[in-house]
Amino acid sequence: MNKKIKVAISTLLCFCIVISASPAMLVSAQAPKADAVKTLDLFDTEEILRRLIVMVWRVACPILEDTVKHVADALPDSKNWIDYDEYETKNFYAGHEYFLDEQTDSSVWSLGYSQEILTPEDLETKGYYMAGYNLGKITYKKYDDIKVRTICLDDGSSRGKVAFCVIDTIGLANADVRKIREKLSEFALENNIVSINVGVTHTHSGLDTQGIWSEEPRTVINNLLSSIIDIDTYNGTDPSLMERIFNLTAKSVKDACNNMTQGLMTIATKNISGYLMDKAYP
Image (tube, rainbow, N blue to C red):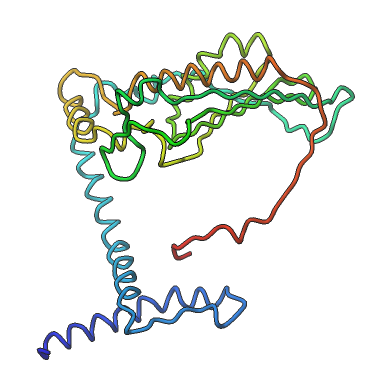
């Protein structure tokens, strides 16, 4: 092997050892057992490559972030953006001023449940973008339906009901959650619902509800042009899919509220630390 190549490889390996020392010392300081510390094997090419990638990413990430920031600063603001001073918040639930940690004389738990199928009826003919497994992946089939599951809860304190919805999808924007609340504004007022919370399962096997995995080139080009010419921004989501999610989620809240029954509230806990793992360094 050429002497210069040997010197380069030796230098690179020494650098890897130095880089690996910091996380190793951190692990050794926290680990209760000495055998929990993983040392660097100079013949373990996969581990060396992994640490090199981590090292390069730690150096490149701030540079990339700074580059994107400068490019963004150079572009004019979109004509469709609303200035912070002109923004008017809507469909936001502020909650109560104080936390109730004791039962009242009228305290009694009531709970209602409902679920709706969100899978588009035209899935097999139209096709929809999946939220993962590469960009632009269209699916026409399903294993199971995607759903929204909702509970409506009341503690009997007369402070109001709360609704919790969980949707089988990758994620929803804050603006989307407020569209669901908007559809429920009158119903919530009439039925003393004081909080409507919408969460997601963050599944990558569902449909794209954030516009990240669908028509990415079109979205980027369109939204860049919107800063220059008078056109609307495009978020990449399917309008019919999103409207179906909004409508059926709102319906599930109404149904859960309408079928509430009184009962005994119980709670259970379980240690799941053995089921979770984080491969990233602390």
